[in-house]
Amino acid sequence: MLEHLTISRTAPVLIAGPTASGKSALALSIAERLGGVVINADSMQVFAGWRILTARPSPADEERAPHALYGHVAQQADYSVGHWLRDVAPFLEAGARPIIVGGTGLYFSALTEGLADIPPTPAAIRAEADALRTGGALDRMTDALDPATRERTDLRNPMRVQRAWEVQQATGRGLASWQDATPPPLLPLARAHALLLDADTDWLNARIADRLGAMLEAGALDEVHANMSHLDAGHPSAKAIGAPELAAHLRGELTLTAAQEAATIATRQFAKRQRTWFRARMRDWQRLNVPEIG
Image 1 (tube, rainbow, N blue to C red):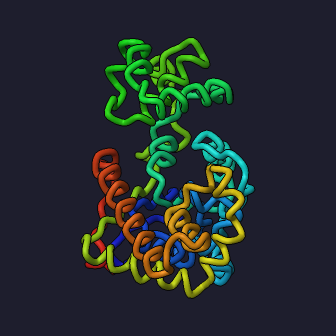
Image 2: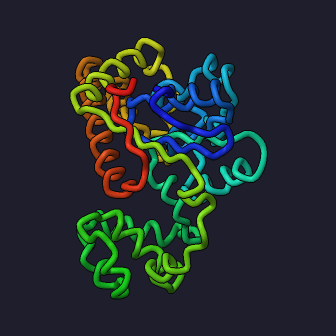
Image 3: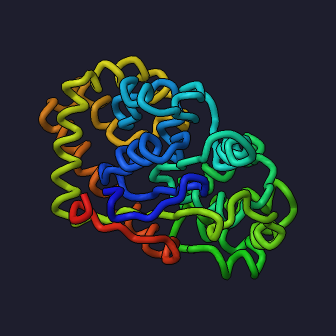
């Protein structure tokens, strides 16, 4: 794949793409041939308890080139894009060239466009917001938003409405106002090689199915079993794709075949959402079609 690219040995490299598209392999290849440290930009690969199910680089891969921000967060901990920005910042200031790779688009947009420094939402306000949203009172939250925030918010997305409502309740200031005060980005896009992997849907779906089978052979069920308490508690790490379906099998609610099929479908749906997001938000990135370039 590298023969199709012109990449310097000094500029930061950003690699985004849907799950199972080959991002990690490309990052490792660049690090080995041109130098650099591979840095995670996947919101689930940060958690210590998910190596197999999130397809984190293997120990063998980690021996081939330096890796950072993989598995460094406790499974029960909260972790946000703000946490990730603080963690990634030192790698942009000194040392080996960063090769930042992952499928969490919000991490990349915050890195290259900036992120508003919004205070955390108090637990009491979060609980009230959850109750309003699940209780069918989304319109009440929408009506409470200031006009500028309401205009910018996807009102068809309950979680976006809830987030805007929480910010306004917690800070007395609309989300739009916070966004307008966004500080400069840590890494402007013009200073990096920004690569976006895209893939044929049939090819990607086959890769997803094959990879899930390999995960099961590698011990994904044991990994999910070890994390059942975190899944039951609803910790942020519980959002790992495929975990709920495999947990249902462990509880006796699904056969392994049914759980595997459900997890495959969930992963394909996730990949579709990723691709939609990337195409809308990453128009200025260099698009690489796989497997044609593989």
